[in-house]
Image (cartoon, rainbow, N blue to C red; front, side, top):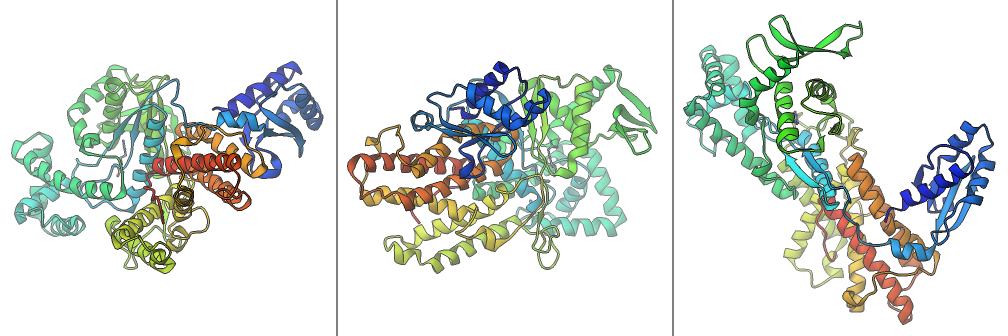
Length: 568
Ligand code: ARG
């Protein structure tokens, strides 16, 4: 049910009646005393009409038709309208989310590690944020085309392949890619002959030399298998089938530059092929070029992203292309989108969006590193998460509370909580800001954390176990009878709106904040409303609310890519 748009329509109809113009701007209320939803658009509409906002708000309330939808409308503050929903309306609204009536084809570009090196924490954010949005889009019936734009091409591979051949390297010596890279780099920096052979290898690779390609393929497969192991551990929905790396555009680069040239957009500058667009001026007001081919004939990162857009729009028929990439690449994407638009590679009916994210910081507010200053390996980070979660569970004496939880189940729980905590800590922060990675915060059972939500879910399930409830016999809808029940049902009913907002804007923290609010309302309901000891009608009603809460919590956590446990 689309509650926000329904309320907006009705209030905007009242605007029209009163000769006002503007949007009602409905938000979910941030505090119980503000009702369930708050219309924030009245002030602007009143101002435009030169009228007193509170008087306008009252006039709007007097003529708004919300019969059967709201039980109360009230003027608040400088001219907000607080809306309290009617119980019989909520009963119909609290249903499972419905698919979008306008399904789209959405390319989600995420993860994109550089295969020359080991995947590090910098790619963690892209991986889990992108994965979440892909899941949310899919759950609303959109066709999602996952694209892992790995860095599998370029000059570093000349050095790595030369070193690999020289060492007769096997998958064993590539087991520690970081180390392998360091050794190769050292060799490259200290040996001129090696350097020459490395450069030669790049030329061979780019000209399609069969023997070199075999070596390259071997390297990529081993490096990619490291990433895949991490994806599997993290529960990320990416496979080799989603991998369209930079190398896959190699054969399209020349055609892409030719196409741009055909549009009359190319200018040669110092031997390089450039596009000058008015919107890219420096401080001095001079137009800065976007380079698509260097003077030595080589192509650039932006060239492959332009070739890539030809595939995504031309072949994949994308309606939207969403890039979950570090905020530091903002200018790159601005340029690529602008050139694509100017060259007719894209068109205004396609949405191209860079969904940037900030840096993960250590407690010292500096980019997350080990004590020795090295980049933190993701696999080690996850090992530590699980170790800490195990300790947490032991301290909570889960087993003494639930004697039939055996060691295997406990180990599984530790994995769910450990991995879930790392993912949730990231997803729950507004992605555009940097955030501080803090073990104690993310593994706390209090606050907006994975353990808190996982526990809230397991609590809904334990009620059914204790009451030996037949879930299939519960009614689908409930008319709520007290305020705690009503507020819980309102939160459940808002799930559809929330998912659509997340699908549109690409901010997972909105889903986290929603689930946290829902769990909070469930706690209040649980404290105020006895369930299993109540009479049949009350018990049935409350069990249905409990089931609906649990369903939304489980669904939401799954969309965040977090596995749930039935008990803990
Ligand atoms: N491999 C790139 C990096 O590590 C990220 C790729 C992002 N996607 C894209 N289409 N450019 O910076």
